[in-house]
Length: 124
Image (spheres, rainbow, N blue to C red):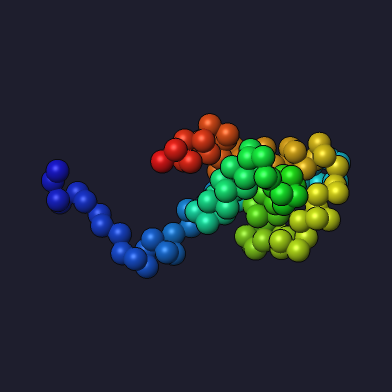
């Protein structure tokens, strides 16, 4: 490899990178559009743990509300700030299932957090 063309990143460059894309999801049931942002590394790890827990016989109630948990983690306002906190998850889970599922699916696709990807991560 020719070192003249390598651009090494600094810690600051990595930590300040705007590396989580967003997508807007039309949600007519809620009367508008929801912006979702790709999961962070921490959020993706939490999602994988919840998915694995849900697949086990001793799954708890938290894993049952996974759609609301993911939407709460990914939904942001126009400034990129989270719309919800974890305290909002139970109430969010009471919203229209079709709307919640539509936003959830975009969050999962944007974060490449498909069941196959989660399964592969668990194996590694």
